[in-house]
Each structure stands twice: as structure tokens, then as C-alpha cells.
Figure: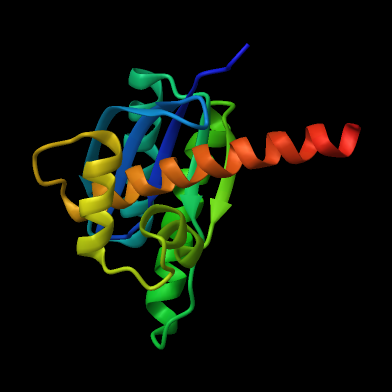
Length: 169
């Protein structure tokens, strides 16, 4: 029997955190919802609290069974990487608080899965997410990334399931 699972994809950010929710059997995926959280606050702890609270609200409202999130990539700006890591931590804590399994994917593997190249642009990801999920309107960039991360997890999750079956044989 094919299992359909609801997946929350998170594109973390200390200014804007994107999310997308899909349902997938690993082959076919269906768009449920997407959006972005404008992170406002005077201090970093305030911002992290908002990310935790808002992701918790999304999880409570839409009831995903698993969450996928983008890994931190180290750029030239160490401070930006640290803030991104802390935003990821707040989102991961919200998922763990709600008893969700969490999987992590590199930006390159997400782009490779969605657009066929690890160097795809944001516009290419937005376009391909719309095509793959049959969404006609333009998707905000961070929300499109959240959906892309969810799609990457759906595809990778299916591959892992088959690898486990092969190993058992």
C-alpha cells in the first residue's frame, strides 16, 4: 500500500522564513499550502521566539508528519551564517516540540532535485516548484524554497525506503 505523507519544508531565515506543505507518496506530490514568516523583533532572541512560535502554529494548523529543512551553508559573512543557524535551530525546536521527524538537505541537493542542476537560480526554483505542484500564481521566493525543500524530502524519502528494501533482500 502506498503511504501518503504530509511534509513541511522550511527555508529558514532571520528576516524571512519560508514554508511549504505538500502531501506526497514519493512519486506524486500535491500542494497543500505555503507562506512566509516576516520575522520582526528588536533582538535576536525575540526573532528566534517568533520563528519558534509561528512554525509551531503552522504545524498545529496543518498537521504535517515530517519536516525537512535546509542546511546552513557557510558564505563569506560568518555573522549571517550564525544567524541562519540560530533561525534553523528555532524551527527545528518547534518541529521536535511537536514530535516531528526532521531531515536536513543541502542547498545544492535541493536545487539538483528540483531543477536538475545544483546551481539553479531562485527564479528557476520558483518556476519548477510551480510546474511540479501545478501552482499558477507566482510563489514568493522563500515560500517556493520551502516547497522545494519539501519536494526534495519527498523524493529522497522514497529513495531511502527503496534502499532499505534492497538491503533487506
